[in-house]
Amino acid sequence: MEEQYQDKAPEFQSRLDMKDLRNNLERVKAEIGKVIIGQENMIEHLLVALLSNGHVLIEGVPGVAKTITAKLLAKTISVDFSRIQFTPDLMPSDILGTSVFNVKEADFKFKKGPIFSNFILIDEINRSPAKTQSALFEVMEEQQITMDGVKYQMEEPFLVVATQNPIEHEGTYRLPEAQLDRFLFKIEVGYPNLEQEIEIIKNQHNNRLEDKTDVVQTVISGQQLKQYQQLVKEIVVEQNLLEYIAKIIVNTRENQFLYLGASPRASLALLTASKAFAAIRGRDFVTPEDIKEASFAVLRHRIIVSPEREMEGLTADEIIRQILESIEVPR
Image 1 (cartoon, rainbow, N blue to C red):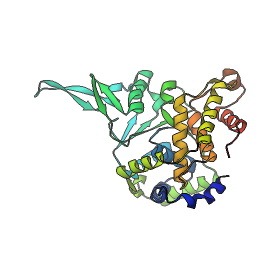
Image 2 (cartoon, rainbow, N blue to C red):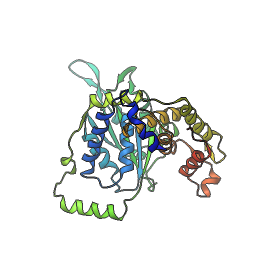
Image 3 (cartoon, rainbow, N blue to C red):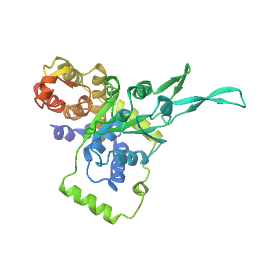
Image 4 (cartoon, rainbow, N blue to C red):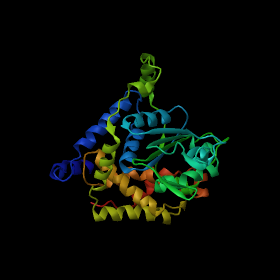
């Protein structure tokens, strides 16, 4: 189906010029590929999130390159980068900033925290308690913080990439549903296969650099990224595909296997992500395959499997797959 649409792509080339966007994103992939072996799914979804101006939660066991991939991606873009290591004793003021008394001026002055950046990497986000988690609610949704009655606006582009470990529970705190809903994607990262594992070992053996990020070059500017994000918004989505998205979301709310369905924010996230998937494939229109591909990362953290089905081993991804198979695909 996707190939059939791609064959028609030349007819639409005069409407939106996607060449520069696609070429630069391929260059970004190549730069990251100098260090990271495999993990194509994670890298592609991170690029889609960039184009969508959406936040990402990366979940995976230790050592599968979650943090280093985010750092490398940040280096390929000429924007401010900030890393916050979440710990149990971290306070909201450690993230947002705090008012400090200025002796010379005899007044309080707001000192900005590390959240005031363009690309923020939050490592081990589930290490901090609910009080600290809630400090991110406003800034992730509205790209601003309110401190002492004063609003401080974040500079665009603004992207939060958070990592968490799914198997370690001691000293961790479950993310609130309200915060999970603010992430565009939840990317699940698995182990590399045998061939990739061999390449990783060879790459480490041959690479004498202490800092792996030294080999990665900047590819695009912050202004270019904002232009690409604007270009993605102009991608065409037919009426029947808008209805297709709505049917998928409504099905999660009516599904007997789910305790909690997806919110309207999920509909908007699925629409935006589908446009970005089309863009990185060089198309200026969305296909049903774009929507299907985006559905798993958009929905898996927004739905809750009913306790009975969870005990049977049924996962969120399996239910999403069943939902996609049960809904007629627009043609």
